[in-house]
Length: 261
Image (spheres, rainbow, N blue to C red):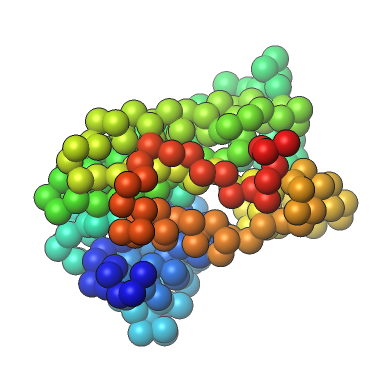
């Protein structure tokens, strides 16, 4: 990015592991000051901050449940208190489901429990909305870029069930497009990445429980391998950079060609 991002400020929700940690580290590599937010994995969030500081960057951690509006409001307030502005956001907090039924809570239309539905929607959809609701007013001051995290499950459905997850990720894409249009003339760009089969900490337990799962997931894309969190994060950073200055309202698959089939 030729140093063009240096000195700016990024908020990364879900920065304790996976796509969020990867993007936080890449932002820091571009000399961006980073605010890392997480809820369940507080130790992971603090570890991300330590990794950034050890590499000579600036970062703080704010414990945040994105499904709680007051906590998201506080997150953005702490960002401004610490660094005075907000230029970029990667909204990557998310969950598969309750975990009761294995990978992605393989529950369908008739078997998904209301508790699971509400929990997934509150984090994946409402959480993304809350984050944008409080990030955008700060970005209106200087312009900015937001990247939300959906999934290939936000572009196409699967036969794995995962009804609540699939619905929530389709919703994240809708939220992204609506916000992109609303603020297109206000120097704010809003895009969304849609990762496919990618190895992250969120699904490591599933790989351990089912040794054949990784190979089955790899076959879902033409490259016949899993992606990495870093490969997704590279797209996030590009979308936030001036190199993507005419890109807004798009959902970009990072999936090894899976949805091209």
